[in-house]
Amino acid sequence: MSITKICCIGAGYVGGPTMAVIAQKCPDIQVTVVDLNEERIAQWNNPDVEKIPIYEPGLSEIVANTRGKNLFFSTEVDKAIDEAQMIFISVNTPTKTYGSGKGMAADLKYIELCARQIARVAKNDKIVVEKSTLPVRTAEAIKSILDHTGNGVQFQILSNPEFLAEGTAVQDLLNPDRVLIGGDTTPEGEAAIQSLVNIYSNWVSKDKILTTNVWSSELSKLTANAFLAQRVSSINAISELCEKTGADVNEVARAIGMDSRIGPKFLKSSVGFGGSCFQKDILNLVYIAKTFGLREVADYWEQVILMNDHQKRRFANKIVQTLYNTVADKKICFLGWAFKKDTNDTRESAAIYVARDLVSEQANIAVFDPKVEEYQIQSDLDYLNVSERSKKRVTSYENPYDACHSAHAIAVLTEWDEFRDYDWQLIYKNMQKPAFIFDGRNLLDGKKLTEIGFVYKSIGS
Ligand code: NAD
Ligand code: UDX
Image (cartoon, rainbow, N blue to C red; front, side, top):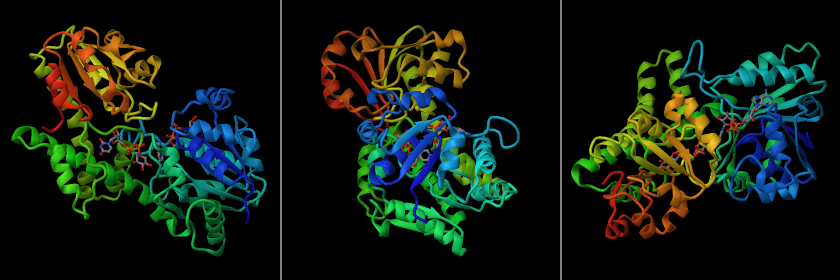
């Protein structure tokens, strides 16, 4: 089937950029992105494209080129479902916070709501594409809901997990390492797979489009994130050993990364990985393994999370210990709050956990992040149940020099490029002495800062 109308349910970090790129690369396809969140849709429709809700380098230009032509953002979910031949489900699948599997399993209530809505509205045959990251065998549950509509509509379900990373979403979508499409091995399933292959073929070469069965595709997404996060936890485990032995984790990472079997990427030691995906997806994998009674498999992957929790706590402890075992009423400046550079996303950012630990020691925290607003920082602290009193200890600044002014210490939590180019001489002059820097991203030039007079502490050396 040649697809001319697509609908995507969920206008978030995945739905928005993914559909914008499809619209740009497939001018003959009309793409409608829908969401229940009216404010989010209003932001996507803001006439000033710089004010769209998601910051990603290159995204606002693509939206400017396509919006109103073949890319539309709307809250009319039923209408978009009815008109589309292919429906992408791109809603959030957070870790469950209640009931069985609490704190581990993926919460599939939003997915189920989408399936029920599609079942209710659809009047003709549809291809439903799982774009969200889902536990293996979710397609079975979706199919069971869709197959009970009683109105004779035929559905094909495809799994097409998204591998983009935030901060590089547009580049990742334009130039993916691979596109993965899982579907049924029946003739109808294969035809559905082919319709989606045809869409991606507009800009992705055929050898990069992999087709598999649905279960392999669903499980590959969880596995990819688990492997990536495992590399970060592995190098972070070594960083602690480096600090005890005089080895330097940057040198170790370089030395091992040049082994072509290991490779150089994802070996950057840090204050700990964050983001909406890694922790959630590994917990999900652990839960699935437990459900099948695979205790060793579950324990093996859970260790990646435990190591990450340790790395975040260790960073906060190091600040307290270095500042003479007390940070009470001291001003600590956080450079960065987002979970990585080039995004305004703060979900599961290490900064939130480090802030929580430091305010519990009664520190005052001054945050500067180039893209994160104050209300977001306060609501992140709510997420960790930080008390109202402690939350008052965290303030946000519009300007890094004011944030650092009269601070006892600076902690770098996000690797924003601009931090390297600050006037560090001026910052030093205006700080309390001794002036400490805790570089949670090994971003700054430690040698230069030490020459200025700072006490510079990095991760893993
Ligand atoms: P998000 O929270 O940014 O966006 C999800 C959107 O779905 C929200 O705007 C929400 O209002 C909307 N929504 C929820 N239920 C709905 C419903 N029933 N009808 C209409 N809209 C509804 O989430 P995200 O970061 O875009 O992630 C979406 C999925 O993609 C998740 O499964 C995630 O694991 C996966 N994923 C995320 C990334 C990433 O980097 N963020 C990368 C790859 C895969
Ligand atoms: C991740 C996957 O990379 C992506 O393929 C998937 O689709 C979604 O989840 P994302 O969470 O957006 O993407 O960012 P990623 O670049 O993977 O970084 C995750 C976290 O790990 C960040 O906090 C980052 O700072 C940290 N990290 C990454 C390190 O600490 N060291 C590294 O070497 C790499």
